[in-house]
Image 1 (cartoon, one colour):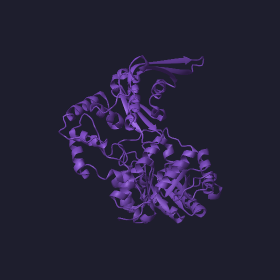
Image 2 (tube, helix red, strand yellow):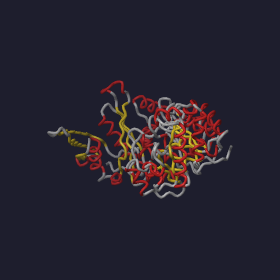
Image 3 (tube, one colour):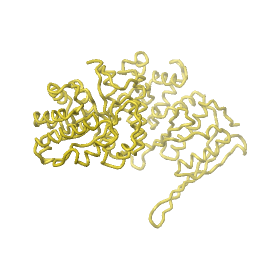
Image 4 (cartoon, one colour):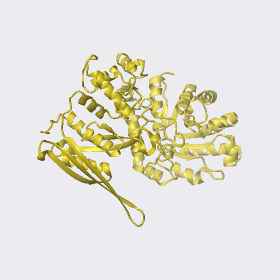
Length: 534
């Protein structure tokens, strides 16, 4: 089977949009479609023409795709109407899509109860609708809804539904595990049985993830003969989601030896994380292949072994999918971990260096306090270099005052005004004391503005730093309002690689100040800026 081609069909723009708290604008759909096209996806399902204004607008002005085929989704004609006289079907067939995927019933129970029609009539609905789609677009797909439940209940009828679609001219017969309840061994057995009657070159698989097996089920179907997989970016979808193409694609190529339209996997990690950012969702750091922790090593023994032979604890080279190896520093960190991390930031030292043991202890103490340096590498580098005496004294923090005023009008609406006053020492004597104040949209914004007003006259490079993300996590939630927050900030400056800093304190203001100051100091340090503190 090695070298055979697997067709990839992405349903992110329709199935993914059914995810709770996720929605796509027309422009977002176009942008995502272009990204999927660049990746090498074969079919991109844009949505359901006629079902909502967003999808109508997308197909009215479809995105320009270089390789992928834009597909439209719909359902088979309704009983009592011909394909030409069913408004819902006509809207799909008259769309600008290059292919049409129609969903129909393949479980006799649903035909009897949900549709309430004769089973033979359902077969005619399928064949007529697929024939109309084939005539209109040339490429028609049939999504056999609840196929595996239907096959278990009445295998002969489920197969007749597929054959009706094939008789209508369907290019792909997609076997859907619609409620996500089928297990891999069942998928493989049933698909293999279907493949004895219908060639695998016509069979596709569409799995939901309700048992956590969508990826495994999809791979099992491929092993049994299916040659098309439907899925979504990052497994997005209703309930527990769909089969995750981000995990499936590298597994198909790197582990099973199949070919797909994706020829370069190195952009996969960026694509996955950028997609999460687009939908305002924190990336799953434990996601296979692309997660920030997918190639992270915490124990000292593991770190030492990885240095000598990465295959010990890494199933692939992370660079193949655009990811990075990470040696995590924590309370489990040993000298080997620290040495690796020091080399990563350009500090060469010997394992016998007497400064190493105190550094390890400081890191362990910080970890206990809640400083998770694996997600804030800039703060980690500053911690190390401070311990080694390599961070100049750019300024000294003297005092910070933050006031928040909440003003309520008669309707109960609230307007928040935050004022931050910072006092810094930037030199000796009375003239070396600087006091600045700023209003902001919340305390962190006010603090950021006040600190910049105080520091930019001395260090103009800080003017262009942008705070791109601000996250607060509770370390010990069991303490309720007495819990300690950890603030993590992502910073950018003029297209340079971004950097993350953090602060931990019982006061969220203090934690924010710590993260903000680290952000400024790190940029000065890596820019080689000399201290103007006199």
